[in-house]
Amino acid sequence: MWKEERKLIYTRNVERWGIFELTLEGPSLGNPFTDIQLSARFRKGRNEAYAEGFYDGNGKYRIRFMPEEEGQWLFETSSSIAGMDRVKGEFACTSAVNTNNHGPVRVKDSVYFEYADGTRYTPIGTTSYVWHLQDKEVQEQTLRTLRDAPFNKIRMLVFPKSYLFNDREPAIYPFEGSPESGFDYTRIIPAYFAHLEKRVKDLAELGIQAELVLFHPYDEGRWGFDRMPQEADDRYVRYIVSRFAAYSHVWWSLANEYDLMTHKKLDDWSRLFRIVQECDYGGHLRSIHNCQTWYDFGTPWTTHASIQHADVKVVSECTKQYGKPAIIDECGYEGNLDTRWGSLTPEELLCRVWEGTCRGGHVTHGETYWNTEQIIWWSHGGELQGKSMRRIEFLKGIINEAPAQLAYTSDSYDAATLSVRGEYYLQYFGPHRFAYREFSLPEGTYRVDVIDTWNMVITPVEGEHEGRFRINLPGKLYYALRIQKV
Image (tube, rainbow, N blue to C red; front, side, top):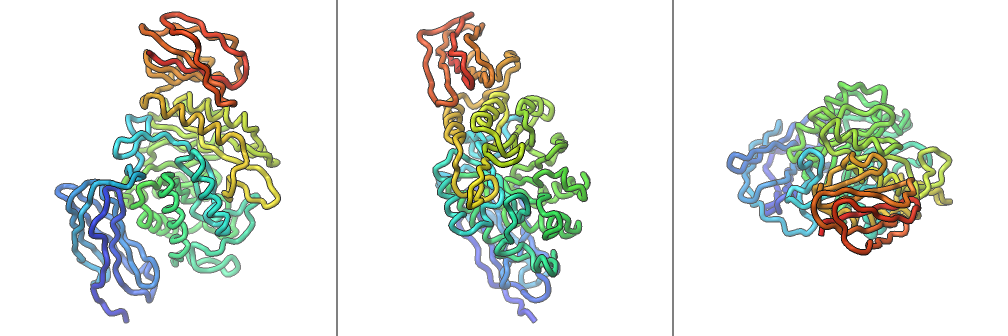
């Protein structure tokens, strides 16, 4: 029998939006994942929060918390085990000093993103679904690639993937058992999630947001993680939220292509969203990704729209319909696979990224070039081979130099336009080869730049312009125009 002794380790000082962790010793016999309840209340003045604990193996129980207010915090635990119940303590929350610590990304003014400290955030994302489940060298190569890339968000699956070019078994499973004997969904393997956590930490050091996709349909009965019983789904979601909610750079995506998981109904997704809301005291961003049918992003538990659609023009209507930021998380991939979605030219992917951006949305990068090692960025990570990435970086620089409150305007129906009326205009021509454009702008003097988005060249137009004016253009593909008030 386990001897009930209070033995605890906890953080005495933590940065604002950093990680407070309380470690308790408790029983390892029986089933700690189903038999034991553990949580804590955190309080600073009138500010109070609730966090659930999780079992981390070897008799270790942890409670994590992300404080958002500087000062002295008090905590008290609640547990079904006397030795872990009513444990009290306090810790100091200090100002953030880590240069990558801006707090979690939140929605600002309905259609923008912003870090909690007010720093601007524009998602420049990519997708590498199971990079963290590859051989160690591939994982390290992925991190080296990301270190030199422009991306500040990455979509990644929690569970392993069985799909095209994904037929290997993972080195470790999230639950006890095997494909042959079946899995015991009541017994989580903490080491699986500890490894995921290590890679999430690595992303934090690079300043990259980690969008964790909790469910996906790429299993088809191989492991059964896509069709667990309701109580197993709920337990797993509570576990992963309690483990990762203290990381300020985590986003929650309830599923990839949720509508392909036909054994889960809309009520199931609503329930799972509410569990995330209940357990995530930090209010991290939440959404869900589709194949054909969009989720109802008007629900209060979704913070933004996450869409798969080849026609990125829908992003402006989506933002208008739901009054929330919209991300085209999958519009197709630059690559050469024998699939419709995995064989875009770099020019086409870049065109879609620019078009979606200039319609007030955000478009996620993806790459699917076949190679003999069958290490493909979209799923495995490794190295990027494509030509769009550096050009997306060029766009990122332009957006970062622009005013923060850019908004899509439908005034120019034939060219996607972002603007701050009377101050700044960024207009993308995409497949149109205009020889000239005419403008009539509010009072003021403006300077104009012609942007070759493919060759990454910005050419200032001679002189300054007022009122009605005409700008001559080269009549080539993939050009844009930037107009700024002097």
